[in-house]
Image (cartoon, rainbow, N blue to C red; front, side, top):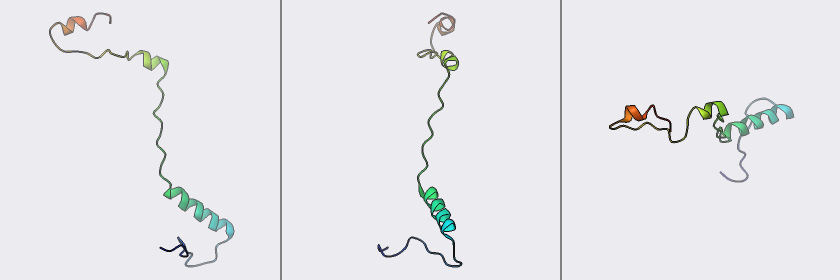
Length: 70
């Protein structure tokens, strides 16, 4: 594709400046990569329900240790 060759062309009809601008805008939006969405922040209420390091462990006495404070 050379620098002189257009990226797209109108085959039929005579678009107005507004119609042409809308077409270019739609093409630009569709070819832009999608932005990654940020993960939703947890509220203090939800965060307090999952203490850091409170992973259960298996082994002898695990059932007894599950009821003890950490």
